[in-house]
Length: 413
Image (cartoon, rainbow, N blue to C red; front, side, top):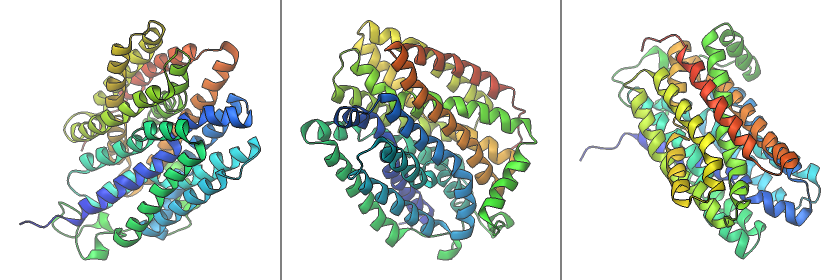
């Protein structure tokens, strides 16, 4: 029997690590109403804390990529898990809205940054020579899967017990993953005396080149990237990507459904349904990104996403539950399908060694968009008592993003 290459073991551990960290960020959608009811905080303030989290973990991404080269994979993952656990424990003691902003905005944002920004391209670049697109797709799928898959369980725990019990459930998951990482995670193929999957001999690109100050390395990458228009086109499209997924749908979809009489658990289940199909959609997208022009893949992903967002309010207004389920399936397939082609284009333009840091900056724009939509959606609801205009505008911007990506110059593999 042929022995499984350890790169696939690292992929599996990374997948579930990202999934566990993603649960922390995605749970904001089901905690919004409980926090509002218990503490009496304004919805826009709660949305602001969740938005800061999304922005903070995005901005921290490039620095996490640089730190990975300096402190190595295992130490960085364990440290990030520790920060997440500390932030969740502090949630039990918060009393004021400013405490929510510090805990959920800054601490949990910092702790989740590594997992939800640059871990996927780092593992794909360092542990795989072949099937990088597929590996990236699988890991990108875990980002949203963790953010969506367990929401119905969290919603049921909140309804039957309390939001504190739901936090305890998340803590238990993170502690199990911390133990698995401690015993089985490795820093690099070289540490195990093997080569990356599909590589037959030692190559220059497998050697680390970034040993300097992580802040300097991150800003050097940014200084190089801003000189290329492709970087700005990717930044603009990914800003819109973040605003139309975890920013708007991830934060406000459940509350939007509740406003039309859909129960909390049902609404959370619809969002979870997206997570199930996200696994399929993002993995297939990774496979496709190894075979087809990544610009055209992104063009169709953004265009179809924009059309679906414009249609969603009409489905809710008319109570078309069957079509709403169709929407969740489609949106799940498209949720993070944009990530593998975006990473591939970054790798093709900037090279394997620099692409993780530069993709970190691109992903920072993704999270800036997410923060914008998370807070902006709360403001739209506050002034119009409905989210409809927020979803309409998100759909229009997705169509704009499809135009951004199609004008990127075709890159040679």
